[in-house]
Length: 122
Image (cartoon, rainbow, N blue to C red):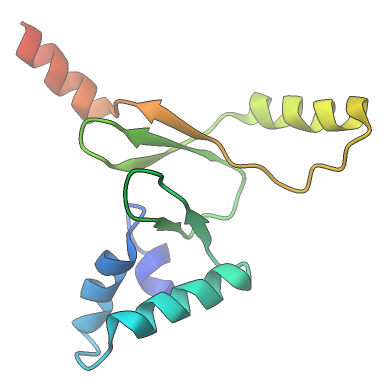
């Protein structure tokens, strides 16, 4: 399951991971996939991205980054915003807070959906 997440070019759902793993292990159950993904999240091997209007996604990239949830196609895409991370840490220092982590999901359109929208409006 770990490999199915880290080798995915997307941020797969549990069902997507299940479909991938099932090709090599046809007797595996969806429940087993959910339990093992949960364990991988708990031990810090992967991240769980909670998507309020859809299925949770899983991410094998542990380096600091953020996500765009596309309102067009529903994909989850990585976004690099190094300056934002610096600002958040600075706010913590200046406020006397101990920030232990944060998540940011930006809602909008991915590059493909923007291009599709431009073509439709031409």
